[in-house]
Image (tube, rainbow, N blue to C red):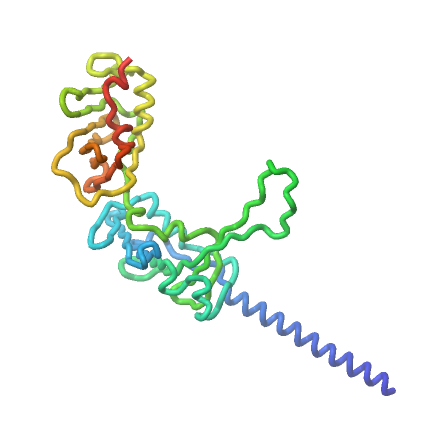
Length: 322
């Protein structure tokens, strides 16, 4: 009888412990489910009128991107510049509806480990006329290789790609989340990276006339007549012209100049159908060049001593003649 009682007691004790374990698992599961959000933000990105970025690359100094009459401008150091429309317009979408992959930390003491403190993170705030719509601290990133990856037998076979994660926290949450992607690449940039670097952007098939103005007697006009190109009245080499137009249809500057020059010694006026004329001017010297474009008014670019942009844009008559 004692043995039966002992077995019964053990069975009851085991049952109680099992129920306790199950209760803890359920509680932990519910707690985790409540903490991990479906998305960090769910806003209408069309409502975003201002993007404030405090990048680590600028030591947390504010870069302000403002939408004026549907066009983005960059404000930095008291100056206003034309923004890179394609680049800036994608930024709110990258923040909106970010899906947490996992919860990385819940306490402030661990923020430093994931570089999401005020001093270590890149801070981004989306606003609508002064009202905060979303805010994010972007911390460090990690690259995670696939688990249980089988040894590669064939060296020519493509290896499985890992995933790049970024650790983030929102302005109103102590929790740190891992999200997919490398957000720092988009937001941890210099102010110049958000500026418009367009020098020439045209459809080469629409072009009909280019007027080159150079020092001395080297100026000339390249024009299209009856689908054939001429330099003044002399036939041009069609292959050379096609190659040239292909090269200049999309030219972007690299670095911005602090100040312009009083005069220019090179210019080209680009005209065509369905377009406004584009005039590019440059002051060219042995040390380099300074360039401006009517497609990017108020912006001045520098071309280093190799003068790659100058060589591409300001060709000689001899390079285009048959």
